[in-house]
Image 1 (cartoon, rainbow, N blue to C red):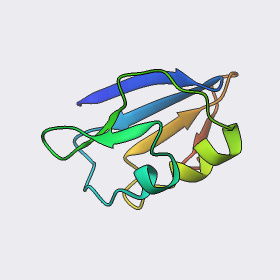
Image 2: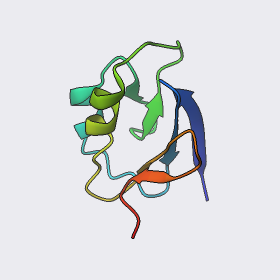
Image 3: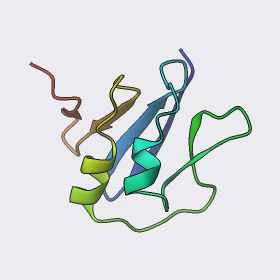
Length: 82
């Protein structure tokens, strides 16, 4: 799997680059965190940024679950796991 990961606002955010279908939903809500790379796939911006946790969690609501968020305890919170 082609996965990139970064810790932002205390949360581990993973981008599954193989799953991304370029809807840009994440970029609309968090343009300071996400951007398209030259392959038109979701990527982290090169610079670190501060973002409100709630806005980050809202921004990663991906229709194909290409974005995964794990909290400080190692629990997956987006997408919600059963």
